Length: 254
Image 1 (cartoon, helix red, strand yellow):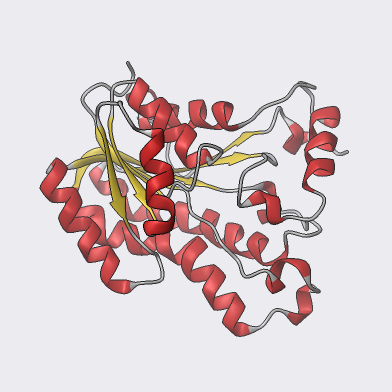
Image 2 (cartoon, rainbow, N blue to C red; image 1 turned 120 degrees about the vertical axis):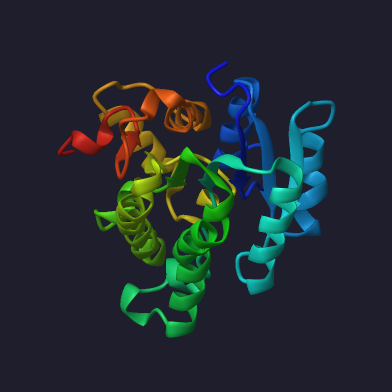
């Protein structure tokens, strides 16, 4: 029960394959009260089924492209929980053309959309929610190795993740005076709804499983365990860091 008595948000969840859902589920099983974010009504009923019959779950809606949603989210969270102990940023999106085409052809419109949803939303959430975050609380973002290595088929999302990781360091510096920790969990390729749009995903997953030092599979559950470590008091001396959850693949020159 590493998170017993803690309250926080996981934004956003799409379905049971979402890394965000794995984190929300495990955090709840460790005693936390979790507000799960969904983008709109299209996903609401799917996520609602995941928490049916479970205690200490609430569903909240936020579309990261709608400015008014941030203030509304803060108001709803404050009314439900008073103060927050953690925030998980688990949202990413890039228009299809910015993923599948040649990198040099990415338009500014697609660049801006991807950055707004996948990167700037973290800054915007911290700015809106920081007043209702408890001292010594925790913020966790999700990234991928494509932030620092050119990964075929990842294109625009690699830029977004590089920006996200830089934001984590600057937010850690900015919020550290209150003891608020900001860290990143960086899983290897995992079969999620968002990742299904990456060309050759299954081959990438197989390659990592075969070449990683541990030579064993990992997935949403392993990523969630690392996230819960960051959300818990076990990580009180850690901020601004990237924790890779890929069976060690990131260290291997293969």
